[in-house]
Length: 65
Image 1 (cartoon, one colour):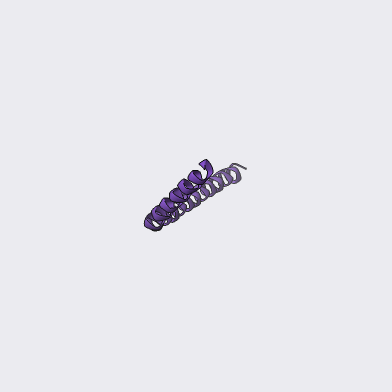
Image 2 (image 1 turned 90 degrees about the vertical axis):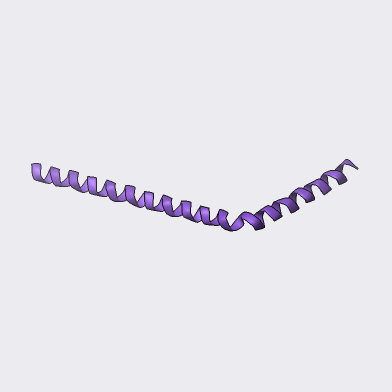
């Protein structure tokens, strides 16, 4: 009898989750995309800045030699 109750409760929770998902899935996905885009830009910025610093160091070494 306990199992039957648990199953019913699990199904109710699942239905609730489904409701929540259909309501909020769109903005949630948009937020993920925005987050990924920001992270990619951040990564690109880091790569670019490290490359420029690296280039600068190489130029200094070449100039000093």
